[in-house]
Image 1: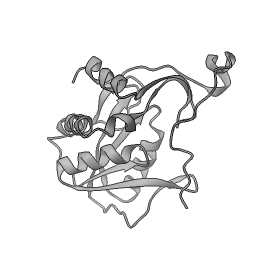
Image 2: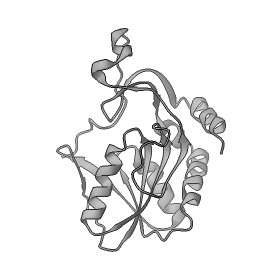
Image 3: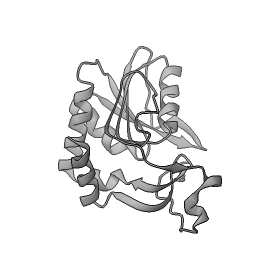
Image 4: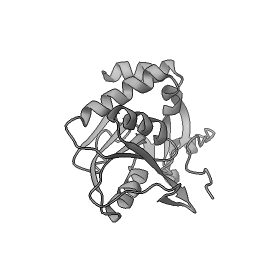
Length: 193
């Protein structure tokens, strides 16, 4: 799929938002990709995930893992298409962990799948969980890479949509200077006990 075609899907789904947003990373931006609004439609979910799955078709994959919450839907569909176990990591007391009986084993080949990458922080935390367990990260796939490819987490990485989107440090944000109301649509603040 071409970048314009993907952007059209985001726009027609109401998933490409403009305004003043606090991203999960803590940065501010005038653009927000609400992937859940695109992925709620099975035809978009299957097509996007088919492209992600195709990018890793030459790899041996035992497990697909995603950071909660945004990556779960896309990770589950990629895992279904590959035909492997699909799990997710989630935050507990602010730390990314495996819960619900999910595990990875030494030598297990794991593909990490996320909805949106800005700084790659959540994916990096998931990668740390995998490597500490002795498993192997074989690749990272995402729907959107807001860094235009500058965030390189592993050697084998693919995103459906790679573009540069303006991000601002909260202490030096022109949108804050203009008193544009700040919206925080991300999932980082969800509490898990």
